[in-house]
Image 1: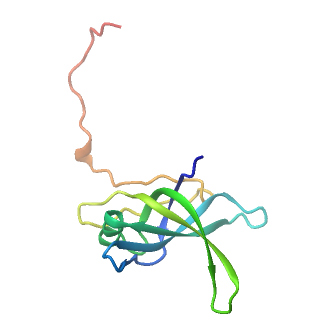
Image 2 (image 1 turned 90 degrees about the horizontal axis):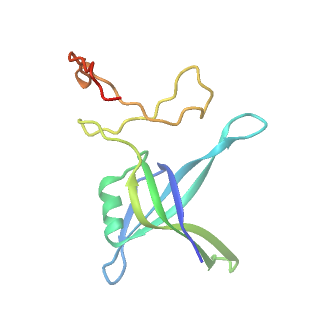
Image 3 (image 1 turned 45 degrees about the vertical axis):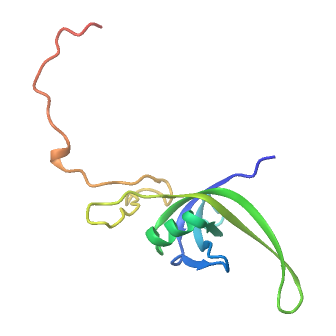
Length: 151
């Protein structure tokens, strides 16, 4: 059987690091994940808010390096929990148990993350890449001529 999930989205709030009675680190956070398609009626993208929980060193990593608004890529498994609410009603919750959490965006030299930018004339969601500023020193013109290439 296979239970593997990979999601990418922005944290909706700062991660909450807690410890169990035995001292094991656990962190929980929610990712806002845009769907790949737009709705038929208004053409707007819908967003799913997915609960994530991470344990041990992954939990400590997330609490140290991630904050509200940061893009994260989570790899793990889907877990369904049954529980009883205060009124005695049966409830069911789905969450992703993270095995690995990765940065979903590059980091500039000043420590701020690059923002995802969409061209002004593009349809919403048509562009999903990240753009980084290009400096003239990043490119150099080649002066030599390789006239005798073997092909």
